[in-house]
Image (cartoon, rainbow, N blue to C red; front, top):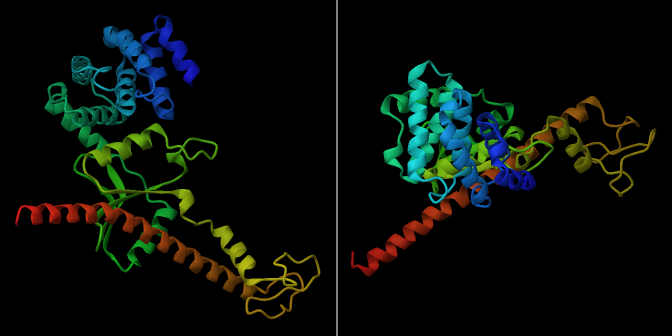
Length: 327
């Protein structure tokens, strides 16, 4: 990606307006060409793209605006004047014809980026802002089985006072949970499944995931993110976890060979040479599920305790200031 970005930087003139939009959108989706590391690319991109904004169709303009929001270029690269040009073109496009909700959602994240930067004079018109906000807030996803499992675990935690699911926040972003915690206060929790990360088992978040996290934190949300690999859930592994922990052959912890007797879940020899009985399997599976639930709950409590630490530090700092001022 770096080679492609460097090539494009010095050959930007060969790209059509559509190519420019697609290129920066692809980079931002992957999160591989951040503006902080490639300022020359974004300078060259804007130099080429801004004069041809009127040649972009609604999709291309939305992709460009969203991509710049995700890349987060500094004002030295994307100036206030540049932002005004883009917002003006967005307003014109929206006024000309109905715009798909998915594109309005991208325009809303452009507006959120303007809010992040304090570029009030580049804001979208009020009617466009309202339409974009409404479209963005309407976008919902069905809770996953993993999410339902975590919800049950959260409600079982002693220090958790209340759990709300699928909460839409005032600025439009939705979060999987909002938890009222005795120590951490109000905490938003995002359970990030595989689609929140790049393909191939990567643990690098997508550009959309990184953008959401950044914007949530900018707006003062106390955010805890839970990557899927930190939450043990595979139902098929319940049996094998129980097998390993509950069955030991010859004191070596190995799997029995065909026809070899094995220990049952109570430590006695199973009556079945090939493995545990159906009743023993059921018990193993239940034990595995409960063990996983305990581990998940312990992990969740650690994450929430970590979220409480900044609040604790702020309270201590305030107490020190109050003491110094004689309050």
